[in-house]
Image (cartoon, rainbow, N blue to C red; front, side, top):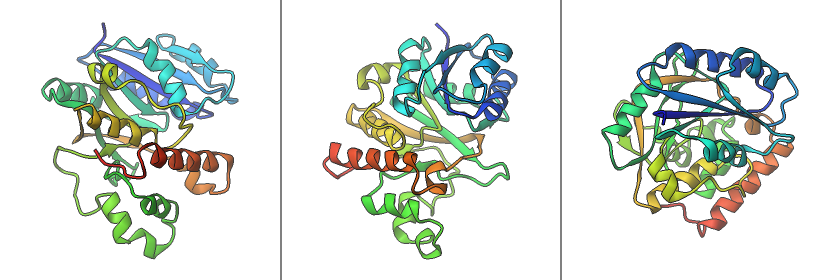
Length: 261
């Protein structure tokens, strides 16, 4: 049994995925791990690249874009690690971050999920650990291009903007771009909710962790570069944005419009 199963889903991000996989092989030491890549029917040669350059990876090729939750669940079902980490394809490691996250989980028995510090390429820290959102917070996140929205109390509270993110602490949720999950917790909580195609499946999963007695932690003592595509924010009227909105509405209905542990 490997220490860690590294799960990456991808859709038309061949070049970024190639950089991420190369960085994993370069920096990850001190733990045993397996690589699982799920390709959501990319049209850019992603699958061929993985087979050619990273034959050690277990590759799942979908015949259509199955979304985030369903694709990650495909990997979760075959993962053999004591811990499972989800990574977005638009990331690169610059140090041995995955070992540090595993070591944190080993010494923190109440942790069901942990996420590390995510940074932009220029070193700016991303608000990857957040409070559970209200409906207005979700709306404000789509309208951040407006100055009075970006600096509103609603959005600052949701993104925990007054916290410098220098200390380890339990948080409501960490985004799915990097969630290291304890296998025991996954077995109790179950898989991701596949009714959510793209978007708040990470919020739902962290909330369910708390409901089953686990905690979600933010660990800032290692960082991963996240280029953060922000697809739905760039294309507010796209099909993907509509699917994201459906996922948000479903999430609030599922939890009776109150997201709280």
